Structures are given as structure tokens and as C-alpha cells.
Length: 329
Image (tube, rainbow, N blue to C red):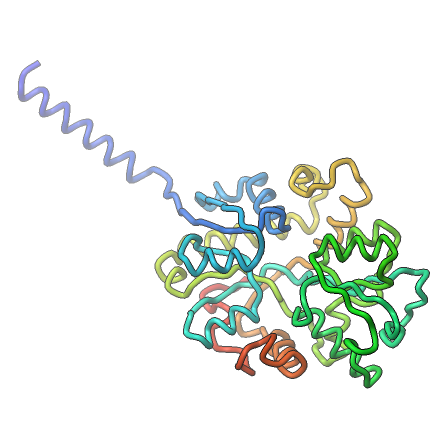
């Protein structure tokens, strides 16, 4: 082959490569850090089962972390683009100058479960009872419960009941094992308690409504830095579109739930599977606008009033930008 023929062939090859590049699908890369056993992983499993990651040209890397605080550390260390966190933490960070923002992911926040045999019909009946609580005395749901207890009875829940704080599995074990007559736990553990014969006296949204917050605030959301939203806006928007499309399918498609069942750690327990599915559906966020977050503002004001600095830090208001203005659904 002559020198000129080789040059011509190389030119054709380069031209073909350029053409293929121009028409090849764009890969939108995003790194998530999610709790290994968290329910957000169910949505990712469903998203991939539906092929929505491919539809939106997403290339997702999902790294496991131990819990929400570990995800927050990964986010701040720039080891992840997106994590799942709560709006109170996001707000506090913004007031500190760490410009994180979020888009709601879930309304599901659990509730107060009771043993039917304990005779607890109202919050006032918690007096003299042992109450197992997921987290610590400054857990946001506990602050809300204590606030509503105070409203209804005028008393102090810490003094009137015997609270025992611990991790969600321990709290569930205390309730189902009879060492506690009531428990305030995460929604997915409350679902397990329901299957074990316990009943929900009040959800956290019920407590908030009694305290004047008419709509359920979106406690948890997809959380990321403002600068990442600017640099990777196409990636973030694509992910959020895929997330909301997945939520819509999870709301109605029973067959999809059957496909993601392995991610739910329910094994052959059909009752638990159905309870988790139904309770998850009850907390699905179906629409979003940053201008419609008044319930979050109201809930934050309550936490500031009753929880103080231990819960919300030194701030008393919801910072502008806590909820991302770059997206609506």
C-alpha cells in the first residue's frame, strides 16, 4: 500500500470515528452514597429494573455507607455527588456556609406503635409506660412526639414516661418482645411491628397535623452541593427525572415490586413484603416545587421551638435554597 493510500485510509477511519462519536449516546455520570440497607436502594433497584437509568443515559455509581451521617461525610468529602439526607441538616449546613440543597425523596417518617394489650388509646396514656425510641432524645420525630404530648397533657414526656433510646432493630425488639409498651421507630421498622401484631396510634404526620402543620413535610431528600448542581445540572436533572418516573411506577405496579423483592430483605415473608410495599407507597412524593415547601418551614419552626439548639443548631428559620430551585415536577 502506498503512502498516499495509507493516509487516505487513516482519514476515512478518523472520519468514521468522529461520526460515531457524534451519534454515540452521552453518558451522564453520577456517584451516590446510600445506606447499604436503606430503602432508597429499593428505588435504585426499581429504576434499573425499568431501564430508566439507560433511558436518561445515566451511569450511576452507588457506594454503600453505614448510615445517613456517613453519607453526609461522603458528600462533604466530595466522595459522592448525591446522598439522602434530611432538610433540617441541609438547612443547618446552608446557615454555616456549606451550600447544600435538596429535592424531596420521601414523606415516610414512621410513627408511634403500641402494644394493643397495653391500653394506650391516646398520647396521655403514655404516662407511666416504657417508650422505646429510635435514635436519641434529640431525634426529630421524638421532639415532635414530645411537643404533641405536651400540647395534649401539659406534661413532659421525658418525665412522665420511661424512654429507652437505641437503634431501630433494638427498638423493634423491645416493643415486640414486651419490654416496651410503645415505640417510636422508622417507618420500615414500624411495618415490621404491624406484622407482629402491634398497631399504630399516630404517625409523625398525624402528630404534626395536631401541632398545626396541615401537610406532611418532605423530611428526606436527594441532597447535593450547589456547585455540583451547577457543574452537573444535566446529570442531576436526569437522575431526578428517573427518580420521579420510578416513584410513579412503584405507586401502582405490583409486578415491579415482585422484581425488586430481593433488595427488600423479606425472604419468604409475604405479609412483611406487602406491608413494606404499602407503607412505602404511602410516603411517595408525587410532585415538587421549591415554592411549595411551607410545611417544611412550619415543621422546622416546631423543631426549633421544642428541640432548641440540640436539634436545629443556632438557626430558627429555613434558609433560602434549602430546597433546590433548579427543578420542579
